[in-house]
Picture 1 (cartoon, one colour):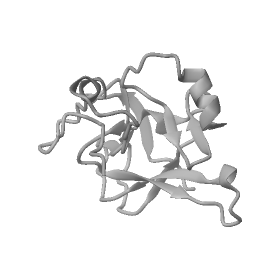
Picture 2 (picture 1 turned 90 degrees about the vertical axis):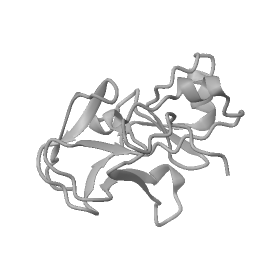
Picture 3 (picture 1 turned 90 degrees about the horizontal axis):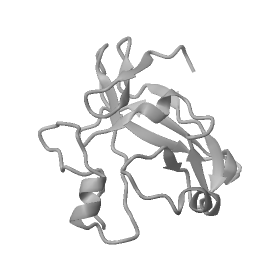
Length: 156
């Protein structure tokens, strides 16, 4: 990948964010989401007893694995959610079917100007019913005109 055109700094959306330092073109692959590769069971064992706080560095890679950016994570873990994102997370499956070798990349879905914050839709769905309390816990502060107020996605 070419040199990174991004930097982390405080975000008006939430905590830290990632911002373009140079223009980024639509379709450009910006950064790989990195962290410790773990099974879903390992993640449940590690974090299952913790109270949800609406903040996560866990990225579901596939049915077998999760990327845990709490450990070995990079700048991509600071990219915030938005209801009107300028990026998307793209999962690149290993051509030989080795699921532990699948990768996640953040790509621009439109042109991004220098200084603009990078965002993508986290696409969070929970097994349990999305109650008002959970929607608030997973609240969205993206500020877009069509903000749903929550990072939780409608169940299909």
